[in-house]
Length: 156
Image 1: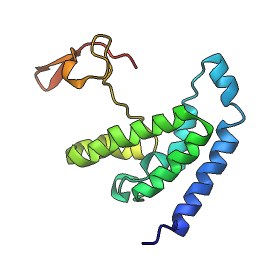
Image 2: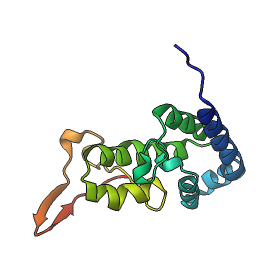
Image 3: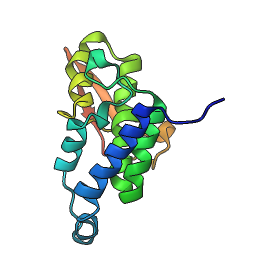
Image 4: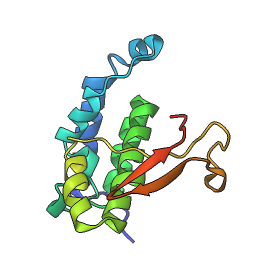
């Protein structure tokens, strides 16, 4: 087996490394010290195509493999854990779930803008009385016509 990176993967790794060094590293200590979050960084990541790396091109993604996603995560993690987690949740828990189980309409409405960084996806699990135990979740939903009414609290 050949475990060498492809030229495309090397280029991606270097691009993410340069982005993190230029856009995040000079500011991260100050942001952390002040408890600041700068969402524009995530939108810049979207402009670079990082938020849609494993998403097929037909949905606005880069159509790359999971090695590419891992390389991008590794380079972000080197500079800031939060950005790596944000990208992992956005892509892994949200966008890939839409890709796998979403309807075509949902993919067009949500997946494409997420892959391009125009919308950010998240994953709400942790609750005050349940922690991250999915079997103990207290939040509820009730269908109301063509919509759903959600009730409950999430911690982050």
